[in-house]
Length: 238
Image 1: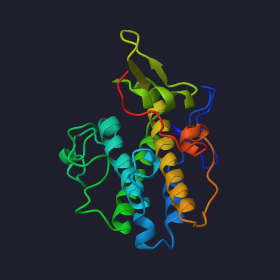
Image 2 (image 1 turned 60 degrees about the vertical axis):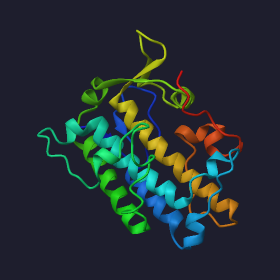
Image 3 (image 1 turned 180 degrees about the vertical axis):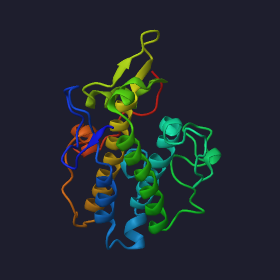
């Protein structure tokens, strides 16, 4: 099996280490930052074109993280988690896809999942899937499972946070090939970046932060930590 350790929160540089993210941190950190927030504070946001980091409220950030935990995990590793095809259906998968044809834009169905306890329940489910995946699969298998995707500006920017696990595709430099080890670290960093956005929204409202996040992964990049309020690289294809 792959190994996980609460103290390991960044992808090890050496391939001799098989450590994977401790995904339970995500739930713990979110719950800490949400505690005591009013409905108004949960839903505070700003849709100004120049304030992209504020477009999603704290509530929507949590919905997106839960979406990531479910949709990414099912799409990228469902064949490993449910080899017999008995995939659970906590959400309507056809309405929650990756890409422009999804009914819900990278969030859970807002008609069904709006209250924080419902969002957290789905988050815990997805985190459980991720934990099960790294607990039961060997690091050798995770490194052997590869997938090539079309690159876009955001991916090109954040790929630099991985010491390995991603490479430019040999046949077309507009594409990136990830092994599953790299992808699993990337989704951890992605979730972490949205917890940081929750913190930034709280700071903007004059609210005290609950925890000190580790500055790892995407958070080492100025756009995602908040050293600049300019919009970061977007989804423009390479």
